[in-house]
Image (cartoon, rainbow over all chains, first blue to last red; front, side, top):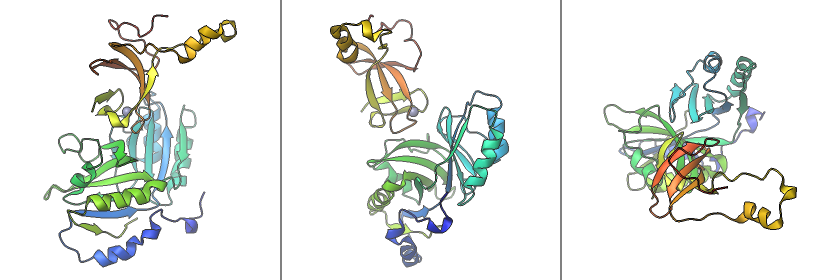
Length: 213
Length: 98
Ligand SMILES: [Zn+2]
């Protein structure tokens, strides 16, 4: 377990807080970027077909097990679960809550064929929002993000530029139709993904937004 | 660009996948009893045929699962996909008769 005071975002050297302060009054940017640093992440393996597994998962997390491919469950700003495969999920928690939740998951699945692993600081999350968020990501992503086939609550593991990415659409603004995505990348790809997104968003205007955590 | 129907994620673009060679090649039960030529055949020699071919693919940048694909190597048409450990669907000739 990493002592919380030792935690450092893989984007710390970009001084995003200072840029966010600078951009605070910016109006009309088509792309808004922020880092959701230090979210807790737990990899969960289990047998979806085992009738005891989904209830045990829900008991520990308070979230329904998303068994349909490419779907998520729970609140994107709280505890939520992301489908990774037929027997694999990623549970996201607010910063610092991952170990307590992993303990609960382990206790709940103790008698089952399951594995619970806190993945620590392996990945970081970039929140990509704004009227042109979809256009910017689509420049380097083979996944079809058209609202007809990919909407809020859906996820996919795919590619962003030259990096692996897990993408989760967290919201869709009803008035403007602007989507919001959480983009998960391995921390060694964080700077690449961030600068790639800034570059992709140049034609729409990019605003750096302060991280909410 | 091929659209490959991952049995778990659905249709995705080819760039998310890697091909893993011919499917249904069984490791010989008694390697010690094989001649060098027979062992080399198991280890290195593949059909590489024109037409229907049964092969393994992995959804490398997606769900990271392996699965089988029946593909026509001349037209790139994907006839079907099926899970690891499953037998090729009826009506599809085996990639390698052994
Ligand atoms: Zn897949």
